[in-house]
Length: 179
Image (cartoon, rainbow, N blue to C red):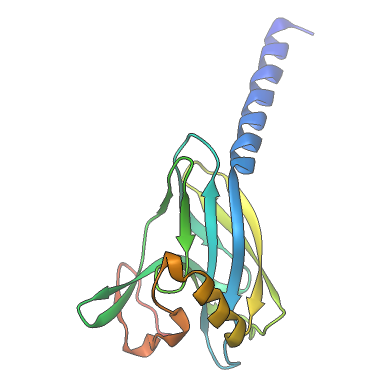
């Protein structure tokens, strides 16, 4: 083999191993999707992203075959009104975490292709700012299980996404959605 070929192989191996290290440095903790009534066209998904590396990360997109659209959103109180809008990214600090939870950052699945019932699983691809794509499977949880889930994340937030009345919410951002 030529030195040139060996150099290319070494560079390719370094790039692959770097990607593997980055992939293994992001831990997905406790993913969940909220079960909705059969007529619902949208639902939320949640997870904690724990970054075990010295490099800040950012979630910039989500893909899922379970819905026509999957987007990253934030819900926040503005005065007496709950506002939900799409965000460009969710930062995950170096050696820190970002929590996607009811009442805060979350994944919105809109245009559900079929009803999601408790016990189902939903596959996602999380797209990071550096181009990395991470697979995630989240169980669909019943309203009762989601209430417990929301309580468990109470230290990370104070609002239950299931209690929001989406049709009364003010929507912001480039895209508006009917829920």
